[in-house]
Image 1: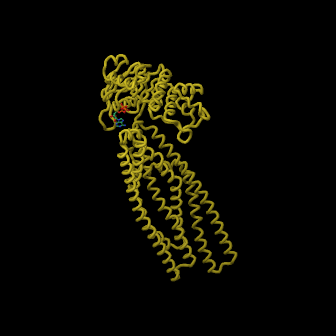
Image 2: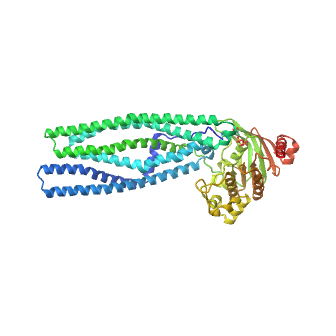
Image 3: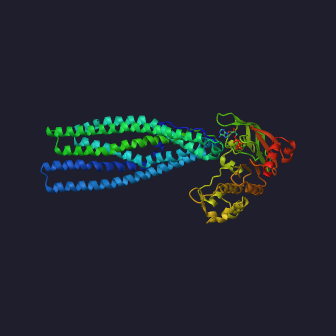
Length: 582
Ligand SMILES: Nc1ncnc2c1ncn2[C@@H]1O[C@H](COP(=O)(O)OP(=O)(O)OP(=O)(O)O)[C@@H](O)[C@H]1O
């Protein structure tokens, strides 16, 4: 279990904004159409005060009733059209946002799936989990709601200012200048909030990481009595998140009131000036009413912009985390194996910057042999399995299949020949059939049933819809043992040349595990099987046994040879036999 993951990178704000812009640009014709709709709707909205001002001035100037009625009908028509346009524009805006969010989501998932497996694994479930859930949701919300709202609001602001200039050029100028302090506060808030939001998101992901690591490794936590340490780590993560959130709230509690006060002051100054000029005879009463209504109307879009800026900043911080995965170096996998001969030669390996955990390991599993790897906990058995499966790459030495470095073989090619089954069997939320055919879409129902039979999955008979039963976390939940049987059946269906079983029957009760392994062994007859085992029941029947100790192959031979040699294996064997007799 890895308790301290290697963080995935985070892109800069500029890269995040550029990536957002690219997503929007991909649907630019729709974007322009929506902008036009917004502009028309905003123009309709500001036409109301301007027309009303005209009517008031017209009444003062002695317009006829018909004249006034025509103007009033025009006002009603404008309001109705504006309402329809704004509804339709919003609908289009949200649809645009949904499409953009879908592009973002699928792009991110595709990128994560193309990353080196070791990198994804070591990033930890918390980091990846928050990126794929919270962070994507934040950006998607911006694209589908916040973004269209801010654009609409900006257009409204521009149109209101333009209308103010039309009503009276001096008032238009005062109105525009009066917005500068509010704009400066907005700018200051944006600059100060971004690092705080980034820190908040990082803290959130680390909290999630701490929780998921404790949950995933709960058995280790309990057996090593680590509950208090893990609990303290959880409290520390929660405390850190609390402090980060407080900083954000403190900033908001300064910026929001400051913004509202400056905005109110400018409205007051504007209306005061308009009144003053009216009293001095420099402005008509219609213009005063129009400017007062425009300044009241300005409150809506400006407040919306300010409210959404917070979401915009949080979303760009989230986008920076999503874009971060693009900064990870690609490992081009282009090697083409000739055959499936597997070899580990003088392999040395260590995790990240840590010390070597494998030293000069040389192992040549023979075609179709069943090689059981045993050894004490932490000796390096699973690490060998990961190297054979191409998840990690050796620091020195080579792991090859058909002469090509395993870590350089394209994954879709490698998975046809080498499959690793670990104790953590994942059940996909789909039918039992789909869970199996993902390994071989051409497999028939008979082959699937046969595979399930071979791994002892008798529970299938009890499922309401047999192979069509939907399984997974939100459907029919399979137990750990059932999930492992499903994973093993998937291997039989995939029919690869090399199978690496890393404690693959660990979740099945010891009585059944031996039986499942025996049937599995016959099902995998003719394949090279490397089985990593804590229990030695499978060792006796293996073709050869490799004993790993302190990252080295300490012994290699048949059961009889190793018992005869009276070394580590013989000791383990005697202890295991003894335990069994007790
Ligand atoms: N992701 C990781 N990051 C850092 N060190 C790791 C990681 N995984 C394993 N190690 C270390 O590498 C060494 C070998 O671990 P490995 O899991 O291969 O041993 P193992 O023989 O399979 O043990 P077990 O039987 O307990 O699973 C151990 O010292 C372990 O702490």
